[in-house]
Length: 68
Image (cartoon, rainbow, N blue to C red; front, side):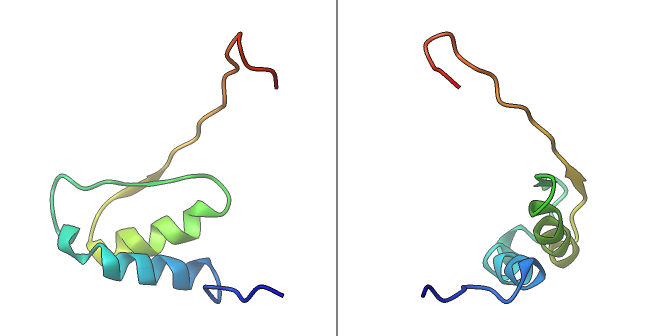
């Protein structure tokens, strides 16, 4: 059985924010959250860095050469 790396997404966000601390309080930083699981992570990163954040949604687009 595989062990989990993080207790939850909040913890993952806090740990990621610690790694990104060089970006704290910079006016050119924006944290983008992917819907669902990425929102709690992005929130914690943005809070720790003092940066704005927003939810970024994208849809996949199929290439004519690629089957879905």
